[in-house]
Image (cartoon, rainbow, N blue to C red; front, side, top):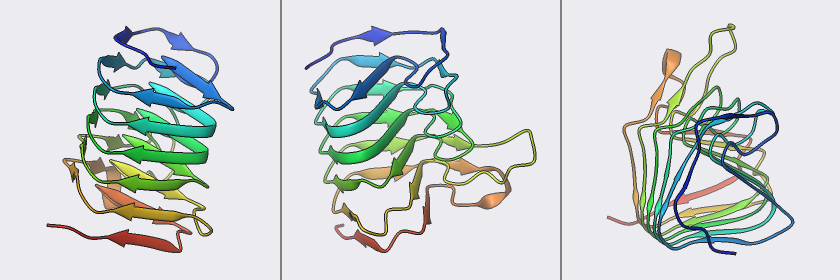
Length: 171
């Protein structure tokens, strides 16, 4: 399915503050998704559990969650060749949280995420948090990851926890 201009500012008591995808494919070519709060803890704007998430354009902004302030991907494939993911806030992965998934980034921007906590939990990955991806592939050959902040300095832009294969290349 394709989506164009989804905006929300409410609290979703499940996962995916604006969009939740389960056992499906999700393609974002354009438009804007503005996140809310994922009370279930995953994906302040977009949460995907099992499937393929392809982003070649558009923008996903903001959102709050425990895992993946803006985007959360679990047991799937995330491919980003364009577009922008920005401004989320979470304990783990202010912008993007990847859990047991394959990731390929060849373009686009992931920016201005914030990992923070008020309960003493150590926040990690201001922009990107990779968790338990030891059997998966993380390939980044293009795009930009910039402006992430992690409270107490635990991976402002990227934090890899139990990630075995992380390949960064490009200019």
